[in-house]
Length: 219
Image: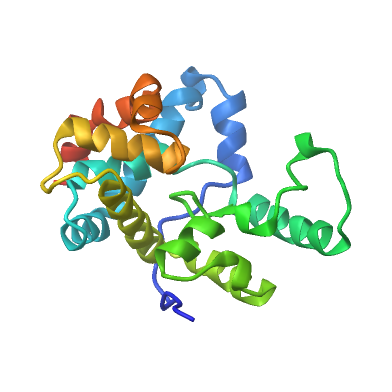
């Protein structure tokens, strides 16, 4: 079964509970709030500049698209929450219990997202040519651990974006409008039609709106 190589690398520091609290609870005048969140996202993209540029070139994508999706996804749930969600969902799945869906634990384990650039295990497995439903818990857990490596995470996100571009039959290089659709599909998946995507492309709008900002961060 294809597996990404999980070689040791030095990652940018992970978004933590402390960071989450500072963003949510501390006012901007005390260094918190939206400015703190955006500064973390900017620094993550700068730190991973080389990997983003390489992945964009490797998968024939605009660097601003790869960076823009990463920028939006970075600083979500702290890493331990993703790990905990996976383990709880694994136990619930094995037990075959029906749990209140609003808690999120009744989702299958492969629906758990990992990585700073958030990716569901199911999507990551498809991206490397595997099927999550055919993977055992150990393999899924290992895939999640791989996604916690920024280099692998960025490359798999770019590979998935490339597959989404192919899904809609876009020629290369992608136009800004193409990238808007592709970015939206990163958030909404392959199921919606193009018409449904274009009616609600707020995620893609947020990505292409930051193209200039991404160019500055990638210098």
